[in-house]
Image (cartoon, rainbow, N blue to C red; front, side, top):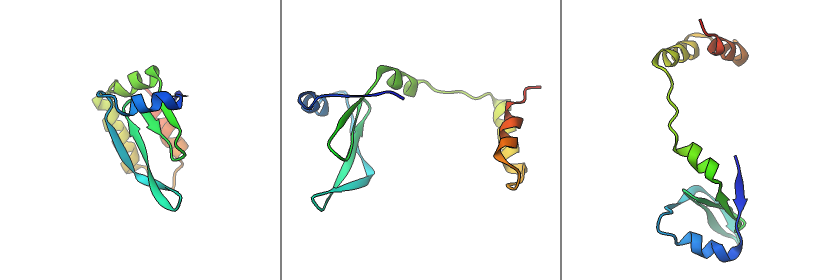
Length: 101
């Protein structure tokens, strides 16, 4: 994952861009004894210490791509995680998932 910093002058421009939707996270941090929510959008992330991070183009493209899992593989995954007991290691589950008949 690659995130790049932007300078404070571009922060104001990025914050009010029309194509960037922002939303506050449920988590908030405290600054001067007042909660300060962490902001994020589809193109940038604002951290609790007022640092604005810009998402890279590669990260944006990979988040848009839908990963499709074959139906048979999905059935196998459900079977493994519902039928193999929790006492067995997750390493065994991963080994079984990587097996291709």
